[in-house]
Every structure is written in structure tokens, then in C-alpha cells.
Length: 207
Length: 335
Image (cartoon, rainbow over all chains, first blue to last red; front, side):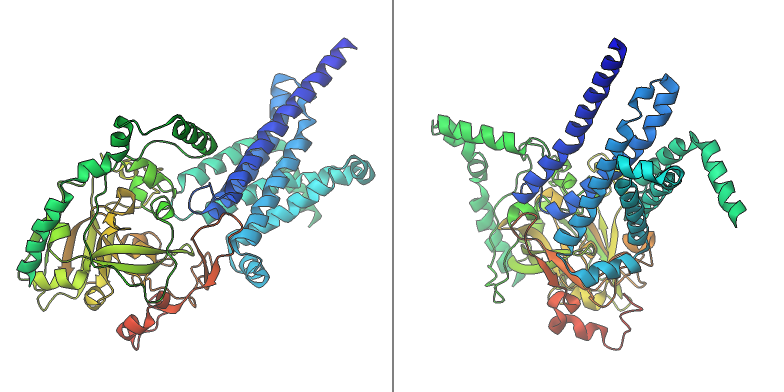
């Protein structure tokens, strides 16, 4: 009993830390940006900050279960949802920044860019998939979906790869950071080598 | 004519003498006891506000006031604030992020400086630091600057026509293009020493113009902005400004100008020939492969909510002065 409470407290602490670490930078970012205190071009800054922030959170989400396994700390698994939802929130702000502050609601340009620019197309596909995961993260839906919930949420691996491609393609010249992120993505996926192999095989078999 | 202007330079030098006084005006005020407790509090809170994202290092590089003929700004262009012009720079030699050049270039040493002009010409010359601001009468030119990344500014440059400089060296018949090179000094330019910081482009930075483009009256050799010599992040002590082309053509901190017979291989073109052409004329009808060039965000004041997306103009609005240079050329092919 005591132990259960201690674990619950630990999870609560962890969640509080995640909330603070994910929300405060965002709050600070927009406070500065709205007041024109974020360099000469706050628009570019908020787009990059939320974009890379979403990617960081996505990778962090994928770090949770390997960590839990390695250190036998199963209690940390529930924070995956919180991290994933923050990744989605950052990605949502990333796109909203692009639409509202960069393109300034030039909708036709927005849709044209999604279709015309491969790096934006890939990023948008990743976002739509991520949105599906965010919506179905509600407990009630999870229960209703049964087995198919896990199949849907296995898309998190594909999403991360798409985001890595999106980042790599979006960069003008400096390729070291996107390559670093690519390697990080591959390492995190390597922990799931067996699972991903099985997933791929099942897709091939269905065909 | 030119000798006369050299005389006016003598006057200017004497004007510059109280420069130390000008630059140390804050120290002087402090010494005179004008700095009250209120002012102290004000700076403290301003620093607290900026704390999270920007560094509060004092700006070390010293710029000096210039004497020049002002631009009357007949088109009533609204200037981009100086604080933004000097803090939002693509100068990968000092870091590939926009704010990095201001942070990392303050110790840049521009005096002594040598700018050699040679190649296919009869009278090659080398200018030293003082020649840059004294060889020609300086004039202000308020130009739109359009970056290939689809943002723009309006900047009051100070300088002289590249044509005046080129006439001085007397280009010969084989001179067809002009090749420019930035200083190559990894010890002073951290972006050249570190691939990640320097954005992975090849150094030294190289740019080029066709001779007739170089001789166009709009083409400016800039030595200053906002009334003073250039800050290092904007390309001190001398840079090119070609207002009808994307910003990357306007090469900074130039050490050599060479007249050549062949079209030079320029830095960004070499890196990604499908994305950056040699001509790089501002053209709303020819998209960069990864973004539209039809419109741009015009950086003036205002934060996130600034409604500043404007239509991009052909040749950045300078078609009247330069469109004739490209008569009969397919600008989609020669982008």
C-alpha cells in the first residue's frame, strides 16, 4: 500500500516536471514574441522553436519504454501520453505559426505549399497521423478501440521517421543537426527492432 | 574631380577625431555623475526581461559616423529599424542563425584592411581601410533588401557606386564578369572554423556579377548604414549591395574584386545549383524549389501580429533601372 502511494507520488512529480518543462518555454516564447522582444523576426523564431520542440518531445516519448524496460521502472510508462500530447501541441503551434504569422492566413498559399513542397507534404502527413494518436489517447476511446488502438499507435514510429525527413529537407545547408536527429531516431527505433520487423512483415503478408 | 574629393576626406578625418568622446559618451556621463538610481533600476529590469533568450553582452565593435549626401527617399519607403537591421543577418562566417553574427562578430578587426581590385584591367589597385571611406564621395541609398528566404527589409546604406571603382582600374576587353571574395580568416570568423556553426557552405564566400550589372548605377559598394560605418555583422568594412537581386548576392567583408572573362562559380550556386542561380534576380514568378517567391514578409516593427506579408515585385521593384539588362533572356532558365 505504502509502496503504491510512493509510486503514485513519483508519477505525479514526473508529470509536474513535464508540465513545467514543456509549458513554461512555450509561454515565455509567445510573451516575448507578442511584444517584439524575440529578435528581428519573431515569426521565424517561433516556427523553429515549436518545430524542433515537437521533435524533441516526440523522441522523448519514444525514450520512455526502453528506459522503463532497462531500469525496470514500469511506473513511468503512463507519462508517454502526456509527452505525446505535448508533442502534438507543439506540432499544432508549429503549423499555426506558419499559417497565422508567416502566411498570415493566405489559405490558398497554405494549401499550395502543402501540395507543392515535398518537405511540407511529409510534415503535414506526420501531423495528421499525430493528431489521430492525440484524439484516440482519451481513455474511453482507447477501451472502445481494443486491439486496433495499439495498431494505430504503432504509427508513432512512422511519424518520427517522417518528421526526421521533414527536418532534413527543410534545412538550407547545415546538415549536421538534422543528421544527428536522424541517428537519434534510428537508435530509438532500433530498441524496437523485433516489433517493427514483425509489423513490416505483417504488412507484406497482407498484400 | 577625384583629387578634390580626397581633400574633403582630410576634413572628414579631423571631424572623426572626437570619435572617442562620442563612443565613450556613456562613460563620460557616468563620470559626470548623471547616472541616477532610477537609470540603474531601468537597466536592471530591461536586462531581466531579455534574460531568457538574448545575451546581454555589450556591443563592443565601434562604428563611426560618416559624412555623406543623404537620400531624399522619394518613394517614402519605411525603414526597418536599425536594431533589426543589425541583429538579423545571414553572415554564415559568424554563425548560420540570424542572431549569431551580432553575437559572434563584435571582436572582428577591420583595420587594417586590404581590398585588391585586379584581374582583366589596366590599372589594378589596392585600397586600405581609410581609402574605403575616402576615395569617393559617399552617398546614402535607401534600398529594399529581399532575402531569398522570402523576408525583406528597407535599409539606408552609405557607399559609392561600384561603377566608379571599376572605372578607376580600367577594365580591358576580356573583362566580362566581376568576381568578389570575402575575407578568409577562420581565426576571426568562427563559422569558417566550425562546419556546424558555419552552415556547411564552402569558404571563402564567392559572388559574381556580369560586368554590365556591376556597372549599373544602382550597384553599390557599401561602407555604412544608418549614418555610421558598417557593423561587422552587416559586412564591415565594405560590402556589395545589389538591390534587385536576392540578398545572398550582396557579398560582405570583401577583400578582392577581380575582373574575369568567364562566369564565376558562386558559393550558393555551387552548393545547390537547382536552388540558387548565378543571376538570382528577384522574381515572384520563379519559386525557390522549397518555397514560394510570390510574396514576402516585410520586417519593420511589430511582433508576431505584424501584418507584413506583401507581394514581391519583379526585380524587387527596380525593373525600370535594370530590366533592360536581361532583354531576350529566359529568366526561368537563367534564374
